[in-house]
Each structure stands twice: as C-alpha cells, then as structure tokens.
Image 1: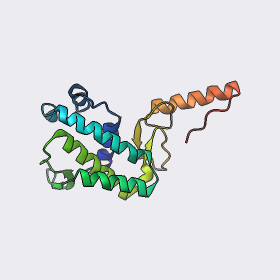
Image 2: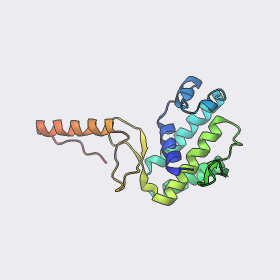
Image 3: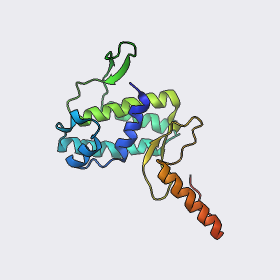
Image 4: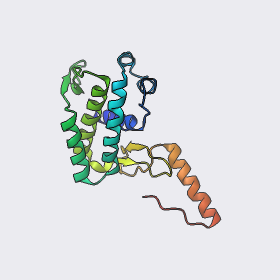
Length: 176
C-alpha cells in the first residue's frame, strides 16, 4: 500500500460529491471495476462518513482530536488489511478485498491511509484549504509542511487577492 496515495484518496473522497450514484461513479471513473457495484446505500454511507471525517481534517495538528477521531472511525468501520503479493519484490498492504460494499472499501482505504500517515508523518499533515470560501481538504506532502491550500488554483487566487489588496492599500484578511 502506498499510504500517501490512500491518504490523498481520502481527501479526494471528502472533497467529492458522492450524494448519488452518478456522482459517485464519476468520482470512481479511474476504478472501472467498481462502477457497476455502486448503490444508493454506498452514497448514503459515504455522505455520513464525509461528515465525520471532515472533523478530523478540521482538527489538523491537534493530536488528541485527530487521533481520537480516527480511532473512533476505525472502531465504527473496522479495517482489515492484507499483504498484497502481486509484485513479489514489493510487498505492501491493501484493504482486504472482502469488503461487502463499495463504501466499505473506500472507507477502509481512507482510514488505513490516514492512520498510517498520521502515525508516520504526524497529524499536522492534514488540513482545510485556507482560501476563502473554499472548504476542500488536503494532505500536505510538502517537505517542509508548508501547504495551506487544496490546489494551485486556490493558492493563486489567494495570492492575487492579497496582491490586489496591497495595491489598494487595504490590509488583506489574514488566513490561518
């Protein structure tokens, strides 16, 4: 398992519209083997999971809240990892393929990736975009833990707004 890929997939899942089958299948476009298995129940489970997981990202850096939130989610959604040997020279972990639904599989991948990331790199690697009015989340994989925006687009937009405010002589609204 590439835990960064799973953790980044967790952020992408949280930022995605999964409210109905067409939206969820659009989110899963790069995983065509799952598309015909998507149900309305998966959508409902993932929307509920998004609400719970957002609290973990919003608490980034607050170790007890992040760890407690992830532990609570892992208790409610048990994850069963398995060692994958499809490349014998590169053994790695995957979420067990015995998940009974698409939602279970996506939730398991998200939790396993985020738990590994938090243990290896710390809870400060999770965040919510600092650009107004964006509410997307991100996983900070930068070497110096300096990421504040979910995308280059939000970063550029915030920088342009700050520049224009300086040109007008107005102090920009500070971002956290």
